[in-house]
Image (cartoon, rainbow, N blue to C red; front, side, top):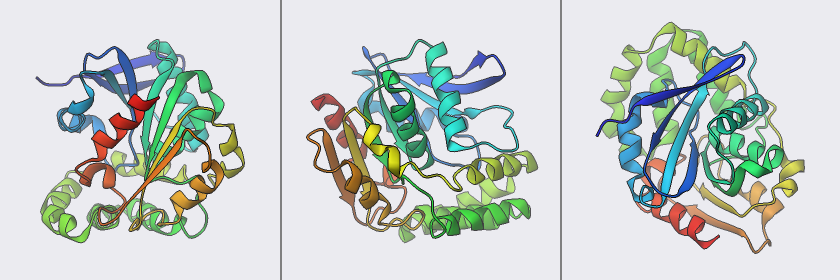
Length: 268
């Protein structure tokens, strides 16, 4: 069955999303930064999260259409909250990966009624000068119109070496099909992480939290999860697991990742 991309329209903007599954609970997935919209991978995403579909109706949100020139993580969280409200979503289990995890933390802090439980994958509570290094390199490639270098650097940074090598030709093909508009959009979204810092507000997250991080994260660093755990650790409703050997994109490469998410959400 093919998954259709839907659009929620709100005053001032619209946002694409996909919906799949038929369970009684609601799961919201907020994906990470990407060069091309994840909406083009709707069927693959639904298949990857098929373990969730008996228990959940799953919503995966894109970023808004028609981005302003400056679009911060806070802006992304605000727009996602408006889209969720328009669709009647509240008290959802929310999983955010990478940049999506940053948005998810903002949601839980600023719009607590929308989030029942929170899972965070390969994310950070702040993007400092060190973490801006990889993202800044991607921005430079995109601004220069060098889609091949962007895609190859993106893949090599996200994935373990063996996965990157197997995917290299596919990454080059994707680069050759990347438009100038997609590169412009990528620059805006990637730039939105700069100066992001909610470390002082993490204590305001009132719901259960699962943190999944990687000790070989080449994008945000292996210490990114440590900073979140330092703020939230010790709470009875906080859990953490650290992957090894699966890279920043453990949410795509670790075989037990979705089952681990499901197990956590079912405990609360």
